[in-house]
Structures are given as C-alpha cells and as structure tokens.
Image 1 (cartoon, rainbow, N blue to C red):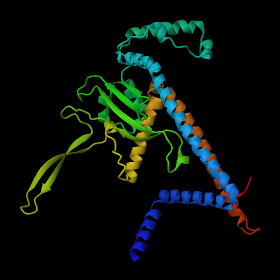
Image 2 (spheres, rainbow, N blue to C red):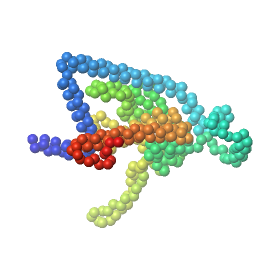
Image 3 (cartoon, one colour):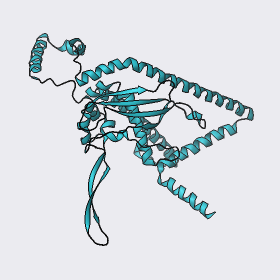
Image 4 (cartoon, one colour):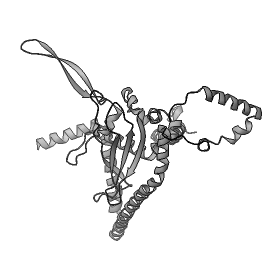
Amino acid sequence: MEADSEAKGKVSDQAMQNPQALAALQDKLDSLSHNVSIMDSLPKPVRRRVNALRNLQVNSTHIEARFYKEVHELERMYSALYQPLFDKRRKVVSGEVEPTDEECEWQSDPEDEAALAEELKKKAAIEEKTEDANEENPKGVPEFWLTIFRSVDMLSDMLQDHDEPILKHLQDIKVTFSGPDQPMSFTLEFHFEANEYFTNSVLTKVYKMKSEPDSDDPFSFEGPEIIDCEGCEIDWHKGKDVTVKTIKKKQKHKGRGTARVITKQVPNDSFFNFFNPIKVSPDKELDEDSEYTLATDFEIGHFFRERIVPRAVLYFTGEALEDDESFEEEELEEGEEEDQDDEEEDDEEEGDSKPPDAPQPAECKQQ
C-alpha cells in the first residue's frame, strides 16, 4: 500500500514538473468528462441513436482514408509529368544545358515599363551590353541549392560551416512516391556530383506514412501522417566525415600518477546527420528530446516535399520566402487577436468578481 502511494506521489511530482504534460492530461480529462456528461444526460433511446451516428462517423473516416490514398496515387502519377521540368531545371543549374534567349525572357511589371522613358530604355540597354561584356560567365547557376539552404530558416538551422563546401556539389533534390501496391511513403533523393568528401552519387531519406484510422481512436484521424523514416549510409572518404570530430583527452593513471593523451571520435553537428535519423522502436518509448527531434525531422521532410522541391527557384530568388513570411505574419496577427480577446475576457471576470463600488484598474476598463 505504501509502495503504491509512493509511486503515485512520484507520478504526481513528475507531472507538476512538466506543465505541458499536465496541460495535455487536463485537456484529455476535460474532454472525457464533457463527453461523458453529455451522453449521461441523454435519454437511453437518444444515446442509442447517437451511438449510431458515431458509427456513421467511423465509416466516414474510412472513406476519408481511401480519399487520401487516391490523392497519393494522383501525386505519384503527376510527379511523372513534373519530372521533365525538374530534369530541365537540374540541367540548367548544373550548366549541362544553356537555355535559349526565348526561354530566358521574363515579362517585367507593366507599370514599371510604362514609367520608363524610351531614351532611358536605350541607355539601359547599352549599359547592360557593356556590363555583359565585362562580366564573367560562370557555369550554370552556382551554389543554387546551397543558397536555398542558407535562406530557409528551417534548413539554415541545420547547416554548419563545414557542410557548405559539400553542398556546393549538390546538383538536384528529387521526390519519389511509393507504388500503388506498396505501403505509403515518399523518398527524398539528394544528387551530388563527384566530390572529395564521399563516394555516394545519391543520398536518400525515406519517410513512411500511415493513412488509415486507428482502430482504438478512429476519430483522431486527420489524414496521412509520417510515422517513421530511414536514412542511408554515407561512404565518407578518409578524414572527410563531417558528422564526427576527433578530440584529445588526457587520462591519468590512478596508481602511478602518469598521464597519457588519447584521441577519440565524438558526434559533430552537421546537416548530414539528417541521413542518420533516430530509430523508432514499437517496444521502446522515446524520451522528450528524441520525440522533439523526430517531429522536427518529419516536418523538414514534409517541407522538402511540399515546398522546396516544387518551388526551388522561388526560394533561390527569395520570392517564396516573402510569401512564407506574409503567411506567418497573418497567423501571428490572428493569434495576437485571440490572446487579446482572452485577456479581455479574463479582465471582465476579474471585474465581475469585485464589489460594485470597487474601482477598476485603468487597463481593465472596457472601451
């Protein structure tokens, strides 16, 4: 009995030390109590009908799961249509193909064109020709993918100085989808030119997905979710592995008092750790740090698939970054409004709890 009480006390202490876990537990308890109270308040015949509606909802989630599977098949089918465009992009970036003058034409803003006098146009054209004559002509689009990595916060957070020389050799990133008879997944392929760092020409990362309702909790289904990922082994050239670093450490002999210096390799921060993700085991629960790392990994994989690969040139120029920032600002403004509404509601409750003649603080007065 004392052991049970002590165990409960430890669980309680751990929950109190973790506000997020405590809040999640409270939300779940509130939800359960809310559902139970509603169902308990209903007459038995009505409860019976509500259970029938819940079964209809389960059937609906299974239809939704089928919908997402067909969407995945459409993605796979349309990726074959996109691929020739992406192949052309790779060839232009690497310098394998030089685009024609017609392909390089880009329509300017009509307002800017109208504002430009004919004389200034001619002058600008002459200056441009002079600059073109003096300007060097590098091959393709140098550091195309590295520039994207530097520009996107999610990727630059992983990027280290020692990664950059390697990513200069990155020529393309592709997304491939699992076949119709295979478990749902997608693969990121990072294609490199021959380099001094590793022998691989392609590094891969497979993201496994689940797209069916959980039998124990079917109502939690909201579409496909990434449940696991697998990296690949990088065949580093000797002394070129940036995912480890060599450190020297002094060891002192306890008996003789003599010291010796030993060297050993320890993990090193690098983007290329992306290809060695945390292993997920169904029999072992992950700690909080590992769960966060894995969730971030899943988010990055999804971002490569949905944003970076399809819109690479817009991330290179920064146009896509402006769109992302605008979207984030809109979300932030909405969140701020909600927070402000919550504060006003709290202020109203505080005001109601005071005696009628109690003066309100200036910041709590209603406008």
